[in-house]
Image (tube, rainbow, N blue to C red):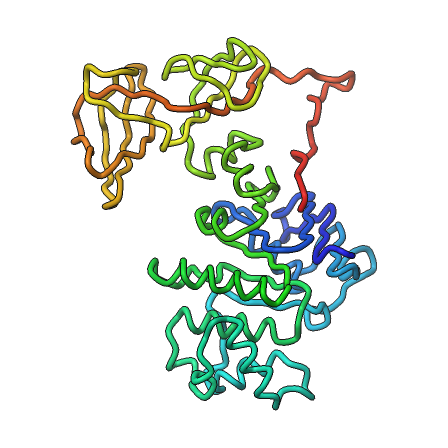
Length: 367
């Protein structure tokens, strides 16, 4: 069976400004989330797959059918995709039933049965069929937009920051309802988001994009616990990166002391990635390395603190709400569990003088 989406060697740009550089991605089923900082190329990727922007090179296949490549450019309306834009983009003058039916082939647009089926799929009551977008909440509008996208039974649905306009109370519930509807419909999905928590909690596969390239494409737990690149570790979970030395393949020393490693690394200079939830902050006199609390942000259930060590290194820590220290307080910092380290030793060069792997992408996993 063909994958819902195959992207190979995709390069996209605007005059004088390259955006995507050699993108490879396979969506074989389920939900894939593309996550990365603003301006990294996420939306350009989605628009190119949708057919709204022409690639400079590379190929795109949807459900085994080539839709973009050398001498091939299938228009957006003929790609067999569902598309949910950031704001839902419902037609304000049409009822919910008419909005949903708009996604159906012309011969089926009068079928209320299919509209009812789709509304149930996105967990909305059929009583909403006669209402207009102005009568719906933001979360309801997004679900109706998804129902419209699912109407023609596409193999792949593209969602562009679909929950960014919703408040925090609606985001999680709407996100889970949308993913449940996609799975119920048997549709694969590609979601673009800047919210890493959203990506990790909703997707089966997470693709981390930095500066127009994928640095890692893996299962959410793999991306978080075994980042392939220090930039992935820094972006996903906001790990603190510290210079250090791997004293063996299983241990490294840095400003936080000697730490066990989760994955083996060659002895020598490294960058050590420490997650904020691993950092324990004790009152002065306890275990760990001495430091001073510089800043605290209280979130209710817990707090985020920045601790400056004697060497000037700043460490991010997550602290239980019951034990939040004040800024300026002297503390001791301890790391629990294993950390990830990345070798910073010079890369051997080949006979051409280029570093091994120079000009290539980090290999990615596919679903």
